[in-house]
Image 1 (tube, rainbow, N blue to C red):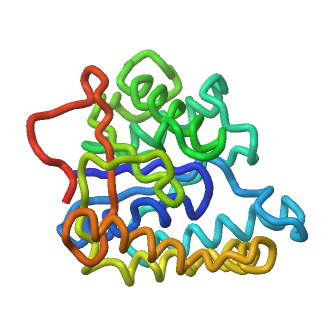
Image 2: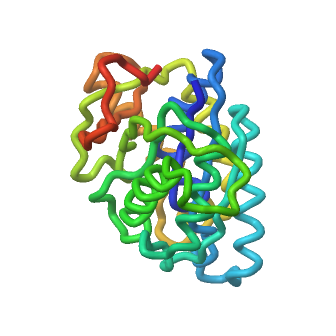
Length: 235
């Protein structure tokens, strides 16, 4: 299968679903990761242009850890909106190139607007990519509408999984990928006194307790028309 994970900022996918993505790769599936926002406002000292470049490189390194292809839509932080037609065109181009069988993205009630809007943008772009005349400049074929899963929210707030993936055998890859985001882990520790890596590992442990394994990630399937199939698609 072809798997496409669409996250908001560089590091969001690492937090929410990189254990699952690493498991897909180990099973022989092709995995692509795409962040929509460039993360340019994710620091109080480093200026936006410098931080944008740093975070892109961090995301590149993280994708290589699990063997995924990396894409970036490069929208500035706080400007992610599904009404941005250029954003949708560029994201739909990624969808057409990847031809996903499964899409993983944010939950509609995540903790901040860029995350929520990334879900709506992913929903719009995956449908737009199925319309042959949506972008007449496109050089890739239309992509069928495919199932979509919501990944966990930050700390699991207001999120009750309906499906779990056992990531006990990929938790260390998940953490290695997360640790590529040095700018964020250091900033969170210094600015908010949060050991972010410990928090992510702990949340994976909690989801593991819920389903009877050591570490897990939780998901919810989109229940919209054309987004469901009568088989399990998560690894």
